[in-house]
Structure formats: structure tokens, C-alpha cells
Image (cartoon, rainbow, N blue to C red; front, side, top):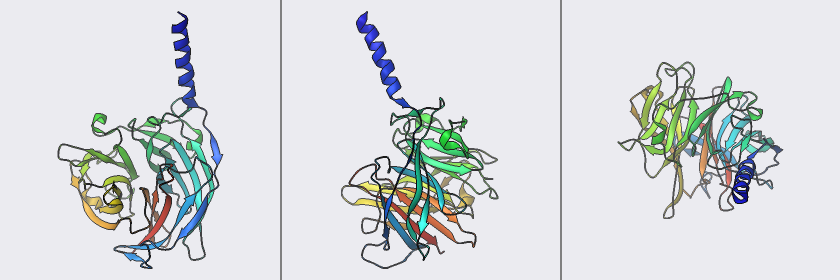
Amino acid sequence: MFCRHFAVLFMLISAAAARAEPAREIVPVKSRQISQFRVGSNERLFGALEFIGGIEMTSANPLFGALSAIRFLPDGQSFVAVMDTGHWVKGAVIRDDAGGLEGLTDLTVTSITDANGEAQLEKWRVDSEGLALREGQAIVSFEQSPRIEVYPYPGFAEAKPVGQMALPFPVEELRSNGGIETIAIAPKDGALRGAAVIVSERSVDRSDNLFAGILEGPMKGAFAVVRADPYAVTDGAFLPDGDLLLLERRFNFASGLGMRIRRIAGADIRPGAVVDGDVMLEADMGYQIDNMEALDVIALPDGEIRIVVVSDDNHSILERNLMLEFRLVK
């Protein structure tokens, strides 16, 4: 009897230890500017993109790192991000006199809460990989425990989810470590009418194409994205014209790291379609890249389009936290 009671008590204590009240920390970050994208070269143009600059970010606070998605606010400076450790990140970029990235400021990290208003500490529950923002909503996709949760925006960092979004295909089709990493909001004035769109990282259908879907609106339904092995889709964002940019990453011990950005025509995205697009940029270890995980599009008031990509260091001393910025020139 004693052993049984002790076992029950141990289970209750363990469950309580796996949950915690949401914590918020101010995280100081040091940055080193990156002036060259191709190592040892002052080349600026890479296909349709012009490299503006970048930063390598470090912090003495062990919370910092593992950035998996980022969304810039309309001012082009402030941003919201998520870590795959189950945390919100808020901050802003600092720019130098030439307009290039120089550092980060006002960075705060807050635990993402569950439906009970508590922070989950178990990795498989809090693997937040994708983020989308729109009026009234911050939408987060979770990978290992696959779901898409909606938080109030503003106020997400202090709130529990207020709803979920249904997938247009069976959740059982998603791999535990290859699920929904991309969630992006289409332009309101396009055919998708501001719908949330998702693309899986590595989960494929019977034709070996990546599962994807339009989650709402008049075009609601599943579609597919041509898989480009060995690449995996890690994030995406829509351009103002309705085209979808997908960030893709590869890694193997023979050739090392690689990244590329693929542009999917917005007119092709519809239920039942299988879509593909041109590669705008491709880079290997001869470039300033790492485990590239996040991408966003910044539309400036003068019409200039900038594209920001961010890496995930997995809290490893072998990987770096990078933020790189490009200008769309074609």
C-alpha cells in the first residue's frame, strides 16, 4: 500500500515539475556585423536578391537561441518570434547609418502557455515551429504534438490559446519531427483573401509531395508542394504580390549545410494543386549560413521589399544564431 501511494505521489510531483508558471526575462544580446554573404567576396547580388548585411547574435543568457520563426511588425524594426523550446520572443533590430543590421534591442523571452495558462516544459509538447501574425491573432504551429493554436494579438505573451485551426488533411500523416514548420498569411487582396497557409517540413503524400493546406476562406483545402530532396521546408512568407517564398534547408555529413529560397506563384496555390517554383537563392558552406530556420518579408513604405532569414542554433556551441537581410531586386 505504501509503495502504491508513494508511486502516485511521485507521479503527481513529476507532472507538476513538468509545468511551470509563465516566465518572462529580459535577454541582453551581443551582435557582430556580417558584411559579406559569400565568404571572402564583396559580391552583393545573388540572383534576384541583393545582400544588405547581417549579424551573428550571442547571449550569456542560456534561454537565447533556437529561433524557429520570426515576424516583423509594420514598422520594419520590431518583431515577434518563437523558439522551438516553447517561448515567445519580442524585440527590435538596430540599424547602422547605412540601414544595415547592427544588433538587437529590447529582447524579452516569455514562456508560451497551454490551455490551462501554464508553461509546458516537455519538449514534445512545446515544439513551436511556425508563427503567423494578423489583426487579433498570433497563430503558432507545433510540430511534435501537431496542432495549430491561436493566441490573442496583442497580448499573446500573457495569454493562453483561444482556439485551434483544423488541418485539411489527417494529422496522422505528419511525421513527428517533420510536421508543420511553415504558417503564413496570404495578402487580403489576393485570391486567398488573407487565409492562413501551411506547408509541412518533410511529411509527404503518396506521390512524395509535401503536405500543404489553405486553412480558411473561399479556397480552403489541401494542396501539395513538390519535395526537393534533400531539402526540407523550414519557413515561408508571402510577398505583397501574393507569391509564397519558402525557406529550405539541407544537411548531411558529406556536403554539410545548405539553404535555398523557392518562389511559388500565388496563382498556383489552390485546393488539389501540386505547386513548385523557381529557386531565387541557393547557398552552401561557402556562404555565411547555418541552420537556417526562419524567414520573413518586410514591405517598406516606399515599395522596397526586404527578406530576412534567421538561423536556429539548437542551443549548441557548434551552431550560430544568424540574421541575414536581402533586398528583392527582380
